[in-house]
Every structure is written in C-alpha cells, then in structure tokens.
Amino acid sequence: MSKFGAVVWPKLLLFGDSITEVSFQPNGWGADIANKLARKCDVINRGLSGYNSRWARILLPRLLGVPGSTESHFAAVTVFFGANDAALKDEKPQQHVPLQEYAENLKELTKILASSGVSADKVIFITPPPIHEQTWEKECIIKGCALNRVNAVTGQYAQACVEAAAQSGVDVLDLWTLMQKDGQDYSEYLCDGLHLSQKGNQFVSEQLWMLLQRRVEHLPLILPYWADVDVASPETSLLCD
Image 1 (cartoon, one colour):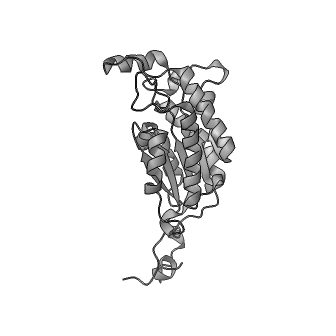
Image 2 (cartoon, one colour):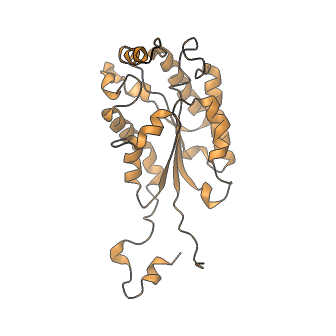
Image 3 (tube, one colour):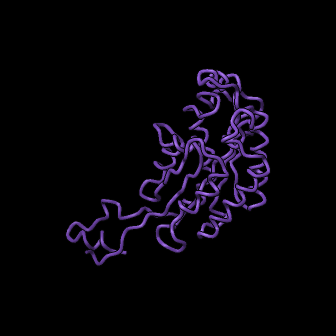
C-alpha cells in the first residue's frame, strides 16, 4: 500500500436529461468541455434520458458524495432539465411536470447541492432549447404518437428556469432565447426538432464555456508536465503532494 495520498481530480457534474446523456457523443458539447478540462477536472456525465425535474429532485442526493469528502469536491455543476417537464400533459403525462412545480424543483436542487457543499456560485442552470415543431412532429408520427411538445410551452419553462436561477442566485444559460435571437432559423441547432445537432452541440459548448471558464480557469494541471519530471529521481516529481 502506498504511503502517498490518492491523486484527486476536481469534478464537473453534468446533470440533466437526454440532451446531457448524449453530450459525450463525438462532437458533443459535454465531450468538448471534457477535452478542454483534461488533466484539470473530471467531467462526469449524469444525463438520464427521459427524466424530468421531479425525478431529478429525488435522485440528486444519491449522485452526490458525502459532504466534505474528496469525492464531493465539485468545481461546478450544470442542471439541464425542462425538455421533458414541458411535454404536453395530455400527450406525455408520465413526463409532464406542471410549470410551478418545475420551478420549485429547480430551486430545491440548488438547496440539495448546497447541503453537499456545492455553493450557488458553482451551479449553472441550462434552459431547454426551443422545439422545432414541424420536425419533431415527424419524429412523433414515426413513433406512433401525436405532437407532444410545442415551442411556446417550452418557452414558458425556459422562462421559469431563468426566474428560478435568479431566485436561487445561480447563473443560467438561456438556450431557448439565444437560439432564437434576432429571428434566426434555430432548426439548424436541432437534429430532430428536440435534440441537438452538431451545430447545436457546438453552440452549447461555446456558450457554456463562457460561464464555466471563470469557475475552472484557476485549476492547475494535475501532475507535472512530462518535461518537468526529474528523470534521475521521478519519484521526487510524481509522489509529491
């Protein structure tokens, strides 16, 4: 057993639904963030396809380590729910969460994080992106169901997310608004009307990095650069705390 302590990486937790779960795919926004933080921070994907904020509120304590332990050392946490909460109640009752409950769930998530030592300044909410109804309806028809999400309703949830962030003292990335800014064609950000295209992933990565950067830019490179290792006595370089 080594007498030297374990090398501990700070953590960036990505908590959300399918848009987070698939973010580690090639050219995904999560993969791009992880690449930027190599040797500085472990980026942990806890995206759960189909989940809503109600289930997230129940589950989050199980995903966090014991407060004060090395396992619970988080540099930042992203909270990216709403796309499923905003599903139309009559078409997707198992995923739909009423608007007010959604807002309260988001605020409760920040309290759960705070109880585990993750302060509000480390938390970033991300609103659901807009829905391109014509494209998503085609997907719904293929699956044998009616259109189950509409952009106007998703916009209400995005606004609730922005307001919950302000009330909780956390930053927010308002994708719903940014992707539709100046009346641009936001369909190019979506691969199926709901989930992100390659361009959408790039957009999220760039926008999120602007919020993450100040939270992680101070993190040092973990373990020495190879050229700085003492060749004559590598233990001196590699086993120092």
